[in-house]
Structures are given as C-alpha cells and as structure tokens.
Image (cartoon, rainbow, N blue to C red; front, side, top):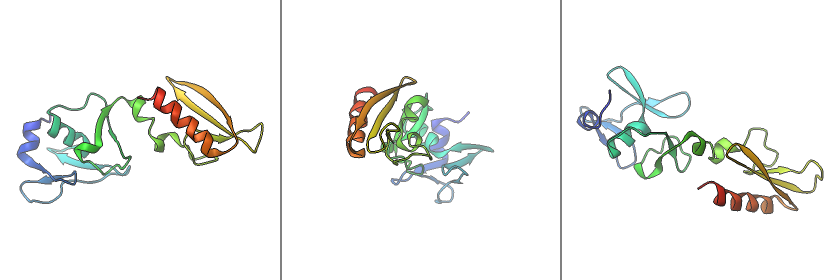
Length: 152
C-alpha cells in the first residue's frame, strides 16, 4: 500500500503541482488517455492528483479529487479538494451536455416558446424547473442563484 512516507522518500512536490523523482530530478509520470497525469510506483499506476493529496494531507482522499478550476493537470494542492462523486458531477464540464442548445450551464431553449429560455437545476437527483426567461443571460443568472443555494 502506498504511504505518505514512501512518497516523500521518492518524490518532491514542485510548486507548479507535479511530482519530481528525487533520483533524477525529472517530472514523474505521463498523461493518460483521459488527460490526467499518472505515475507508476512499484508497478502500480496512480493518478498524480491522488498522490499529491496523500503527500500533503497524510491520507488518501475519502472521495474523489475535484480540480477546482476543472483543469485536469493542475495538481497544485490549493486546486484540489476531496469531494463525493455527486459534488464532482456538478462541475460545469460534467453538467453541460454535448447536445446543449445554448452552451450555458443550466439553460436550454424553451420548447413551448422559441424566443424564451428555460433554467433548470438538478438537486439530490431531482430536476427543478426554475422558470422561463426572455434571455439566456437571465436564465443563467437564475441557475447560478439556485446553484449557490443548493450546491454548497
């Protein structure tokens, strides 16, 4: 099992948020197919952000590691947070579908009136309709107000 002391003996944490091998002074790991940095230790591949969490906090995260700025390779400790999978799924990149009509989080074109926009938010697995608005900007304002209330 990987431990904080093992990590500290093999790696240094660079200020830009990546691991450097102490033996070579070079950046450890590579990028996987999903765009995350991974590091192999004793034949086991680990996500770099999880290793950095362990290195800084002394324990593996209890949930998933969320990159606050949604940049998968920004593994600076200040950009990482230990959250549940449900909270991680609230990130804009996960919430704006590929088929989004507006490209705006929580906003779609109102099918009953093509000149208005509907705002919706999902809370605890239930979708809540926030109303129809004359502009996409107003609909998104309503979405963000609801998000501030429900997604803390």
